[in-house]
Image 1: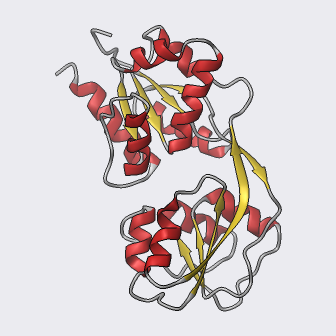
Image 2: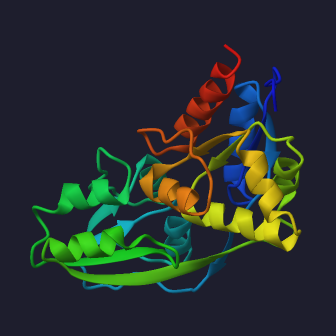
Amino acid sequence: MSETPETPAVAVFRPDDERIADAICLLEDLDADPVADPMLAVEPTDATPRTDADYVVFTSKTGVELVSEAGWEVSGETVCAIGPATADALRREGYAVDIVPEEFTSSGLVATLATEIDGARVEVARSDHGSPVLLDGFEDAGAYVHETILYRLVRPDGSGESAALAATGDLDAVCFTSSLTVEHFLEAAAERGIRAEALEGLTEATVGVIGAPTAETAAARGLDVDVVPDEATFETLARETLEAVRRVDE
């Protein structure tokens, strides 16, 4: 696209619940035209965190809600949240939050806990697509680590509207919130027979991602990443991505 419109079209891939609704509202407030294309759907496993841990780590709002629905209770564990959204979800469900790292990433949480978990039992409760950074980092710090898969993340049927728009040059920006959203976007494009065209279309768009792992996934799959915000929240990602879009015309 040679010129960015006053209301840029921005694809967002959050799950089809209040997260996509909140993302749409935020983008509209930022004078963007949101393209809602959920790339993640949740399949619960009905598992709950083990009960003999010293630390329990949660990495998502979804995981928190599932353990709350299952009736999980704290019994002396130190409860850790990877970032503020997960911490807020824990508090809404009635759980006290003991630790939130200053850097809202897996490596940030590892750095926060590294000096105090030698010999401790650490339970990581999350999806089936969690980064190995947490498990490896805790083990390197001397912890006994166990992972409980609370849910699986799958690509919803019918996803891919954003890929079609990218292929025709009608997307101004994308906001990828995890490595899996990148992978599912490209899977949806391939399913429609337009993977190469979608990738080509994104060379003319602004590509924003949350965190270094997502940036690495995007780069490995042929995307040029333009924005990686220091704060790993969707609001910051959306704001900085739109700032980058609008700088193109300055």
